[in-house]
Figure (cartoon, rainbow, N blue to C red):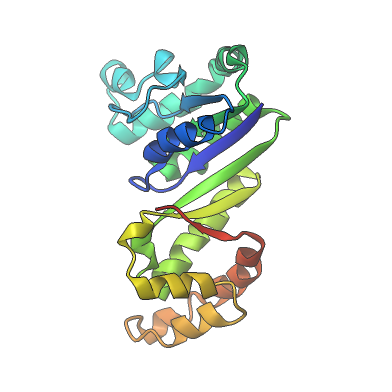
Length: 229
């Protein structure tokens, strides 16, 4: 059993990719279990084999505890640790070759608190696992946005402590010249040169990404940038 954990900002296409990727993989003859790990989602574009909303929902917590949407999601994710054993048994009972975990859209409330990574670790244990970080194509329109989203991706990798693949989603929205830029991101100094020539970024802010772009230049080449159309 191998785990694929889909993460990324809200609206980056995690749920859509969950369904499409599962269908694509099943076309090659492998079995796939889709797991919805978002206790706040209302509508899904796929039918999950395992759904954490069977155990806890943000809506119920909002009504019961008088919490707002974000507070309810935090409590819901943290409380999943109480059900992780049952969730794991259900997943194991499916005997699937691959398990795709669709994580909450509010990335900061999931990855940057103790609850999210802890629940994932308790679920995956020692099985092979990889994280797929989805970066929306809108972040590819200028160098500063690129550095911002790749910084977020690297931060998530540090938080989840798992092998990670970075994928640009909605690639069909990209202008043709952006593809060339994406293909050259891994070239030494290329991203730095783009940022230096970006007139839209004020001079006092250009110094802020300097350490980030140097660190990212060492981090990005070890993780090929994939484009998801």
